[in-house]
Length: 162
Image (cartoon, rainbow, N blue to C red; front, side):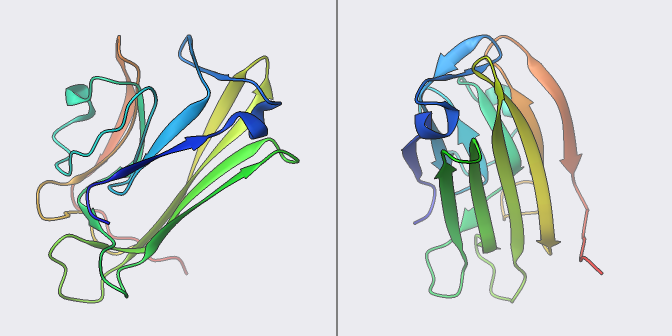
């Protein structure tokens, strides 16, 4: 899939109820192939033009033009765990759009139940071997509809764990 989203019911990880993200409650999230999680509606934009352009609340662990169409272009996995109260989304060994080489990225987001319908957000990064998916540098941000939260951008970051 390229530039798609899938809706995931996350209530099992949060005691069967909704979560609160910046004052709004949600029972599902949309996982986007391009390293973006949204609330309320899917987003299929592949160009990380700045999270301010998104009209729904979002979490961007690594928003760039990810392409998982090929058999060796990586995949996206998720787990909604009622026992631990966590939702884990993993982009594993994903390629960038138009990548003819072997550069791959692996990153993860963990949403954890902190009680009272609230959650914590944790970003975890493995190999980051590309930052430009062909149409702009990757963005890492949290966003509400009303205002943008603190953000980080990676215009030229290359990391490999020891």
